[in-house]
Image 1 (spheres, rainbow, N blue to C red):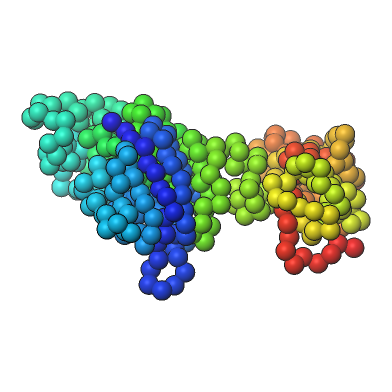
Image 2 (image 1 turned 90 degrees about the vertical axis):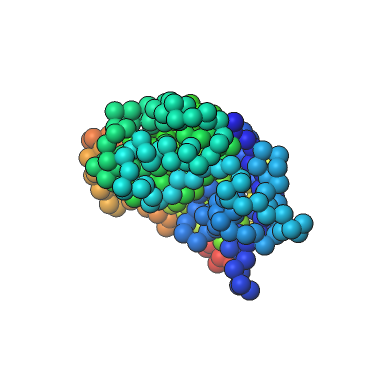
Length: 369
């Protein structure tokens, strides 16, 4: 049966340098999938390895199913084997001399949990292979499979004994893009069908959004925000979260006033813009406004944040068109879906919806003239 995971004030230092994981806390309720998202070196994999018991935390407490498995302050450290977890890595880590069935059966033969002999093992293996779409491949040599199929074998081997918690460290990164997309969608279905509690690590934003019930964005060992995908994408807590999840447009300005969660930003020659802000900005603060290319409305004038700009470059990409638009000394990239480009170079109306503009303090930025 799956179980909840609780990580409290986790710190991991290697030697005397900066902490690789710096005060990270989060929980994963039973049956939920949490994705840790961030660039290389942000601490996400180290966090997962601490949960697995492959790394020993410097400080903090980790509990699985209400049982404390790691608390250095009290001398508690349960071995990985006794944590009742499953793991899926980037590499398939299958045994090349075995068949698919033998690979998946291997963990059950060395565990007495929920098995009552070879017939029971065969049943569990058959059910798990059906679950991951490999029911017809049971007797094939594992070396005859494609990369995606071998990763399914690795997943089946981690699921077959129904661990309390499944840990996945960028398991799709070695697959080609089309296969990665297909297996990404199926992976969530499989985990939800089993009711498995999952902690998934990736640097890929699209994987995080599809797979996670919640996403935790990490940077420099710190957990910046933990929230459902819609909140991460539409209410990023800071400029790093906004930028890392695709808000590449940045407008520079100065705060004129704040009204509740809305701030009015002076963009200089471009004029004023209204933006949502999660930070306690006050009049006079230097700020920047982040927004996504796909949220800008080209050729439209809305009730707020409407401007007249000029298309200075257009890049047709078949299923979409990218425009570079300049207005009042500011420049934005606009994404328009569709197989036909609707705007030519030259003057164009554009609207930046206030709810899709996010203002953050810009420490040390020069004042906008």
